[in-house]
Length: 212
Image (cartoon, rainbow, N blue to C red; front, side, top):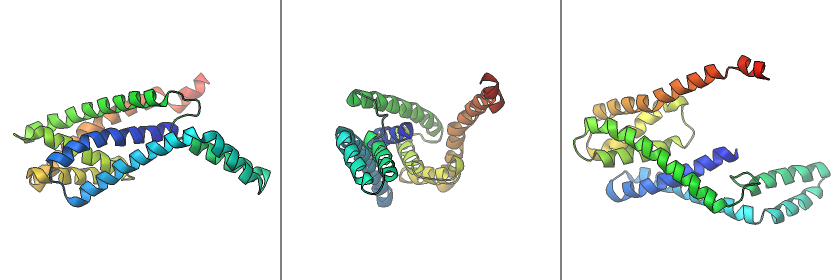
């Protein structure tokens, strides 16, 4: 859970940096801009809550234990485990040097998004003669913000709709935008499916059992 939350927070914050370009240069629908701003705000709130809770985690643990024991010993331990998990935040309890660690995580996250941006730009440069960079950043930001929320398996349908919405300001007709969406979906997901298949075949349950 710590790894999952940390990845989500760093992804939202790094995407927030790219979204500044989108806000400044692309005339997006108001609803889309508002949704993106709210997700960035949520990432910042989670980060600040993480830092604050870790600074007062000893106090919150003791308070939770005492409050829980007013009900019963079992309730006390249950409340303590819950609060302990919350107080640890998105990083494991033994983690030190949070500032330096977050800088490293954000750097890796930005680097990953730059590789993703390069793939999207490569596809869009085939379809667009101008503004391919701006369109690529817009598509990357909107699709990934949209997929940060629960969606269909593989983002089927949702991803394609987000690409079409992202390309609206660039005066690309619906048919071309949908074609671009299918190409981008294949570029993003086919390599992951191949890598996942190889990883699954190399680490099948029966192979794991034999090693145990």
